[in-house]
Length: 276
Ligand code: SF4
Image (cartoon, rainbow, N blue to C red; front, top):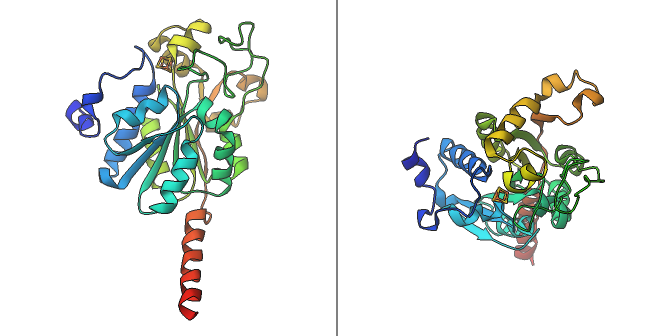
């Protein structure tokens, strides 16, 4: 995509972004725009909802129907939008802290309901905006402003969490694998039901600096060297997979979702009301 094609989807009067030099958020944003453009969606038919955090600022820059909401509540707001306007394609742009800490319950229950949302999870393994604290996705032993001796906690694997909770499309790519990211976001948008794309991205300012890879390109190189395609990962043992980022499509199944069931209920009630 050239610059003028990307510009059509942006509120350029809100530029420049607040994002630090080398941050990966712009890469995930552009991949999302490219996926939407490839699908020829009308801008007015899309609603993008975000919570709070560096990545959640994305809604300020995108020229769709957008809502920049409360910390952890993007999925709750998006659920309301989808039920009120099922004709809209509703996308949630959220960070790892926003989606899996304060918003964790909303996340798992949207998966359980197979809510027809496309969740693009900007996963930089840390809280960026609030000062570099560790998040539920910070790798064990990694450093942050609140784990200066290394995180003692085991992180969630967001793919496994989504799968166990009931999401019906799940994929992961990093900002180094831009084309894969576009492809997976596109498939997630086309999917009916809860789709989750774990977009592993770089925060050189906090995660990188605290973990001795303090540049955007350095972190992209790290993603390149430490990512393993799912097909290869299946042949590796847990020790070999330690510290690796497994990328690929993990699940794609069909199952009736809440939006469909809700529409059926509305029809049933209409019939009952007419009969009375
Ligand atoms: Fe990006 Fe990290 Fe800067 Fe936030 S703090 S804008 S995630 S580099």
